[in-house]
Image: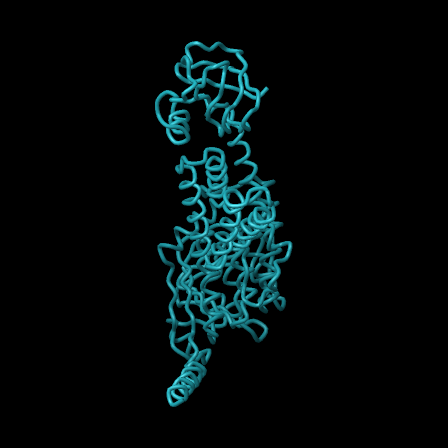
Length: 455
């Protein structure tokens, strides 16, 4: 009884200490090129800040820009954050970085810093054609204006960052003329016009000064990107490829039972897929566990009680559900059931993988059975090496002719035993499974190999 009281009071002490523990100010560095990898890092960091119940999130920014699409994803992530967000520009927030900065509640700038110049260019840095540039400017201007309006900035200033045809006047004062995209220095961005700063809330010489000026309490908690996060970026970007490899490997292992190599490749592909999405913050450990349960049900359907269907169907549904769930971007506070928008990317990746996997499987079914490696692998695992030792054998494959008709003695999966007259020989199909006692025809004789088809 005494030990129970000790455990009870220790638990109360732990809960109380965590409740009274000073909440942190989370700092997220966004440096270098704005990319999908940066988006993954920001999303994971924001989720960590939510779980820590942080007082504030400060993005320390130094970027000349990058992918506008990645910046839009980062804008969406910041809008979902329930914690007050700040940007500290140290020392550049160019191009796509300007959109990310506008997506936070307040902007502070280092004494020597700049924000703006978000005109879209090609991946190589060259100017785009007039038509394409106009389309992109028209499209992404909406995101700049939306971010500015939501966080209390001037939407005209935000649009002038990306649209060189935008003239900006505030209170009758010309801030920016047409002909070039807008770039603001820290002194220009903090200029008071009409009783409020033009854009930035102030100039701070350091993060510590920003924290003091905003009266933020708690220790500063810096989050750094890991090498695994960089690896996770590539895995999540190549998700259809890993799914395709897994599908193909699983199919070949099912068709060529006992070879093991395709099964091992499929297992590695799915492990890499789940590991990448776990590191990227898209899924937890429960997702691969769900996939494993589904796999075990499918294996039990094939080996322990074939023909019952229910375990196999349930297993396949669990596996597909796990694959889709691993790719869903779920934030704290989102509904448990995913929306149509949340399912868009997972269904697209799975659809691409299934289409490419089916195409590759059809190619393999047509050409792989004619390769020496394929027959060595199949005959070396499904049947004993060397000629057949059946008691009824009265000859060898050299006595057979193309077009001769016989009967499968065992299941051809795709290799097995067949009877032609009184001759028992090892045969192989062109990829299909053939049940025992089915009529078959010889379609090719390739040395010691007898290739057959179902009549």
